[in-house]
Image (tube, rainbow, N blue to C red; front, top):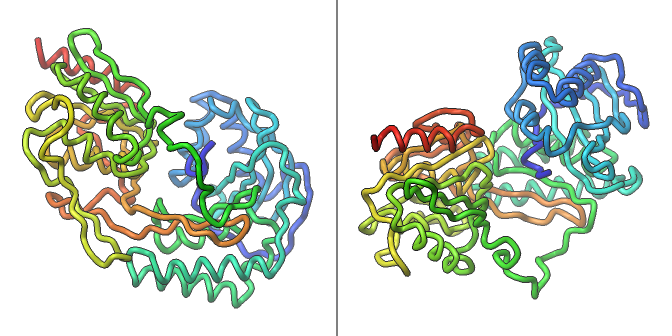
Length: 425
């Protein structure tokens, strides 16, 4: 389970007393909300989930958590680690993979017991509580390093300074003193960052295993085992092309694979590009888009704070193999999981009126980011750039890409096939 899949934005209560190692769900506003969420999540029943969502006001990540019910099979509550009236922290165990442990928290808004938010970190198999403990020196080092990186590299200098100053001020007044384990501190810091920036690429992660100072040398390129993210390249009945790829890799590594896929589909009369499981990645979007236009086309701009310049992205003048061409219909399928570079691809084609977007609104992350190490077990993703579409003058940050044809993501492929048939009859 990915971190983003279970990231719930939170605001923490600072009520002081905590109860460690508690196994029952506490009879508190936070405990009652946790019980209600687990009951709805584990029930696997759309009626029960709908009743929960009618009762509680939740943010997008909690709502989105129900999309992963089939993956996890539900959760067992292993223990409650911290309990306060409006704040609870806990360990969860997957039903489908009982060895898999996650650490989570849930908060209830002051004065409104039905307004809840939360967060969870997947930790790995059978992680002991003792392995997660941290001391004051670690807290100071993690917060200080995060503040320095945000101040220096966050795409907006003003917001970066605000984030940095806030973390330092809260550290100085003891707001992080109560966090005695790594996941809890990371979740609290993510809450504080989200309170200011609301940036889906910004976040701190905790790793049970030691994070290396840099990536180990000699590893195989990412495309070797994953086929560069390309899952299906098919000619469907009626000479309709279908392309599903689940990640955007680097053009230098995966351009050949992309060119082979696009050349295979070049003779189809309509093309469906399925990005419903695509979480983004690198720069191959412009390369793939080059097969959808007959001439060089300006796709988007990227403001890079570190380089202090705007980079333009254009399609290629020439490409290996055959182009699909710039006149035949293209449909892009999206879901709430479609993120980052995958959203950029859909957004840019939509703005250029080159593709019809079909499915659900995407996740809403338009700021490319790089990861910085904060210590042996902590790292931060810092957005350094801002996408600016030359046609709309803006981007999809925080709002997602709105489909032209809005349908359930599960039904998007069937709907678009019907749409193609209806348009050609």
